[in-house]
View (cartoon, rainbow, N blue to C red):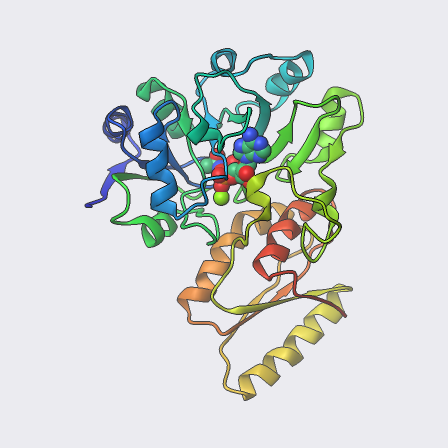
Amino acid sequence: MKTLLLKDNREGILKAAEILKKGGLVAFPTETVYGLGANALDEEAVSKVYKAKGRPSDNPMIVHISEEDDIYCLAEEVTEDMKILMKCFWPGPMTMIVKRKSCIPDTTTGGLETAGIRMPENFVARQLIKEAGCPVAAPSANLSGKPSPTTAEHVIEDLDGRIDGIIVSGNSDVGIESTVIDMTGETPMILRPGKLTKEDFEKALSKKIKLDPTLNLKPDGNSAGLKPKAPGMKYKHYAPKARMIIFAGKEENIRKEIESEKQKAEKAGEKVFVIIFDREKQEDAAREFFGKLRDADRNGADLILAGALPEEGLGFSIMNRMLKSAGYNIKTV
Ligand code: TXA
Ligand code: MG
């Protein structure tokens, strides 16, 4: 299949919308990561997304909308809490899990009675959804298991020849995927951490919310017999080709330890790639992390040595990804 590279102007967006209307697949920018879109109400189109990504079919897709009111066609019930969150955080990096209406097919929700709904902030994304005239199912536009794409080049690297088109636009601003919050229970629960944190939601709702307990379990989410509530969180993720070790502890210790490990490995003939972020600049770390993993692979790294960030605020969300990419291989120094 030839993959069309489309511009992020009106003409490109209209062409991409045509592809979606015809049941095709188009990758497009969002503020979090690039998404791989299909008409969320068209089972055949959605099954092509699973195929193009090599994604397990029990892993549900997030349904993207262009206006707040679109949620009323998709959700069985829109509660007061949901309305508050929509007002505070949409358009933006928040996905709400809701009881779904039956118009959303099983293929889109992986057979679940719930669906994830998100209204992205990125203007190109919203125009595309609007012009397509349907809600758009869009997982991250990477091959299953690889780091999420934050540039059009990353998407091309993974999906060229496997999808109908890619809207080539700027780099994703947030850099990690949306916060997924389950609104179907008594108390809202974060299933996947993101830029919007537990504190952000608690402030907006003026009450305590929960974190899926598996988010604090290491080395794997099943170790206490618990399964993550977002099916996608149980899979191996973001894995670079290189072996990866994370170092946690005081900043100076991390730097020292990484330097000495690097020298050792290089002496043994290994190609080493180091990832250390400025602790004071967590937003930059989130924006750059997935790209760094891909850089390491592109440079043929055998070993990635990474410095841990404090697991607070956005740092918690970045560490969620970093730990997965390293297969929970972490050393305290
Ligand atoms: O920022 C994002 O959310 C990006 C952009 C493109 O919008 N999309 C994204 O989609 O990250 P994906 O498919 O890579 O991740 C969706 C996550 C998965 O962990 C999936 O299991 C979970 O959301 N999810 C989707 N629907 C769900 C549902 N009904 N119940 C529980 N978890 C759900
Ligand atoms: Mg993904």
